[in-house]
Length: 183
Length: 271
Ligand SMILES: [Zn+2]
Image 1 (cartoon, protein in one colour):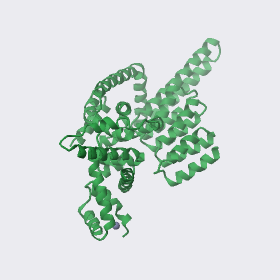
Image 2: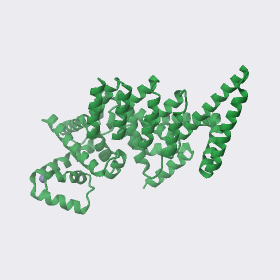
Image 3: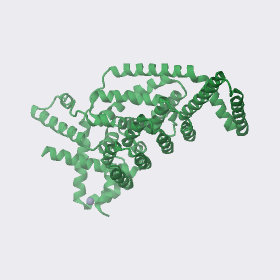
């Protein structure tokens, strides 16, 4: 497990060894980028937000207490950063990279199969975009960040039951958006 | 049991998180309920399909950007230490003192107060002394401000609250103080710290940037306590520009019911 080491590293950062943040960057900039990408669907913004999150973790390093996991703290800060950006993100240009993103489908399928798979994938991608932010957030954290519901409960500061209910509602919403579009 | 009561288990099922007993409960229900079987199957299928959703690669410049940011940050930190480390260190001593020897601390404060008073009466007079007095006042002010800012960065929530309350004693809060308070309002993990920060900022509402910061903060707060406290403040300040942000907040589906009512009420009173 990384978790013990994560906390140890962050405590070193807190104690003043700021360079150690580089290790945490190596470990987490990709997953963090993935989360932020699903929340914004903008590449450049997501990269910029990753930097902001790491900057805030440096600046507010004193608030890290190691009573919880480093990643939970990191995602909490990421959520706050997203909220700070909320207004400008509302005017986001959607579908920024839907197209080239679906180009990279693997071979080995007939052209028809490829097309069908491509369309299904694109449909799901677009359906995810249409989800409400809080639904997309819970699905992103559980599916893509592979966090357990209990961990998500820590990050969102709600009960585990509330997380499960929200995840279920989110899947229902996703299903209905997806099926509507496919029909 | 009704079907809805199994909903929480659905989420655990697709994520493979169910405990054996929970799994059994759900399976028992599924055996007798075709609707749930169908629903769960399609959910599971969609969940599996999500594996295919890709995230584009972040660009290679991220690492360089990070390193640049880190170096920048280290430089500013070193600077901060250079200019105010002395005074901050002394304050740290004083604060430690207060914890270890509260009585001695009190005496020290009394002594300092007497000293100031003595200086005040003795310096009362010539214009040159007036200037010295003014300088002294400025210094005391700066000291208070440095102390407040240092406390705001303290890991203990109660110390941060103390820092917030010190800022209310500063007569002319400058940009540094306002920025620090707004950052605390939006980022402090402790709701009590955020609440007292809101209170302190309310006293500074004469500054346009404070009002703007408060309005912007409306949509970033997710604690019902804070949401309702900000509504009170906006009403008190009669800040009409907050209506837009409140309407934005109402769009959040998981907004607390009590807060929702309160915000609707606030909007009506502001318009
Ligand atoms: Zn059923």
